[in-house]
Image 1 (cartoon, each protein chain N blue to C red):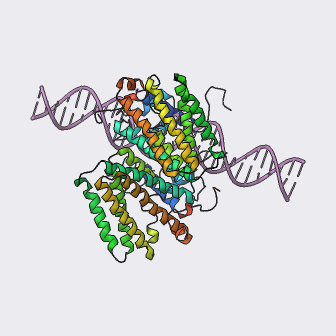
Image 2 (cartoon, protein in one colour):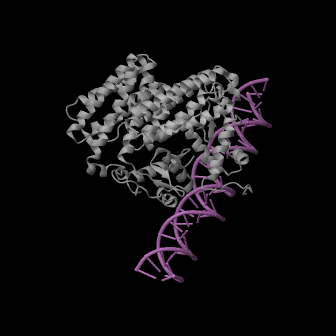
Image 3 (tube, rainbow over the protein chains, first blue to last red):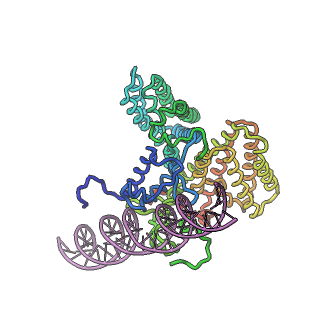
Length: 254
Length: 254
DNA sequence: GAAGACTAAGTTGCATGCAACTCCGGTCTC
DNA sequence: GAGACCGGAGTTGCATGCAACTTAGTCTTC
């Protein structure tokens, strides 16, 4: 056994460390969009050798944060407002498929237990007259669980993978931009609306109403679209956000 | 040891060669499902070193042909009938989204030119009373172009990427299993039905009928579902097909 | 005869060496 | 003064070395 260094050793540990480190560097804006990601520089910054760095870049390319450069290597990607909207729409469409499949499989009442509990917890959370920042964090956690459970109920590994990949796109996740509204009064109302959709979605699935579940899930993702538009209209808030510097709202690629 | 083959040299050439070679080996059934893909063995078979082999495996994992093994490395994946059906459904759903977006953008008549030409060519092809095997190949080509053009008309790189990934899943492409029916009398009828959907899809898009286009595209993919079911009921034909040995129709993962 | 442990070969993940290529700066020419 | 050419530093893509780990096989022991 290795010495009891605080670092967990494992199989793909170096790659995972490189991937996480690169993600943080990119989202923190230290690597500006359009810039080539120099592998030697990352070796020095991340403390791993070039092989894991390269593998991590390959995976981040699939994730959408970087793209293969014209003459080798990888460059940090920039995102337009349309890119974000489309990515959310893709996720909503696939979650709609998952919701429909879940409904059509007519899950037993017991199988819906976790989802019911999650919705109940969200109900209690949202019912509060005012929400603290910690409440928003808890909402993000429960919301993520709701979406995971929804996909799980579809009972398809293939669909799960597709939804996962769609939700892994930058800013396309189910809880993107939620935090931005934590300080606004309208923030709670957004959550109330989303939670109503959670409830209806659970109802539709439990009743086997596939088309309704599909439409609800797609519409539910459009709440994220609204959050996105709200966020884009307030550039000051974006700049402080992780990954805010990746947004190219007006111009094309520099 | 440089091979003195007069191959085209390029940037990611070794990786591409490894990826293509591995794909062929797997689809030919030389690497049975569940078996670990030994990197040294592939080095010897493909004539490239371990680095490109590993990268190719990583990409094939994203493509779905292999999956990371429990204790390192990659294993050849097996596919159940449900996997194939779900993958086709995912593609159909995303093509539905693309069709809706294409319709909602109300493309100018000129922008629809390539799609119109493609549909016209398909019309002429399918109108023949009997189709040769070459005709089926031509159908596959034109059909692929139709689907590419459909996605292009959506005008979204994000959606295009999503559809591309869905269609890259094994057996989930728009022309999967078409060849199987080339020798059957019912083969032509399947094409007639699909071609009718192509025509209606073009009509819906040109009229800006988004919901109709979406439903048509999703239903269109279900023709592939029917082809899949027909193919599964005739195991003799499957065994000769590329990748036929990857199908695990009854049992779970061995 | 069967089960378990030990050994040895093979494999993976990571690090590094190396040649070709790219890009940037300087210099030369017109 | 502007543009084209050239040189070098830096980078990428590929190959290979190395240690830890897995696994298969064999031998021992009960």
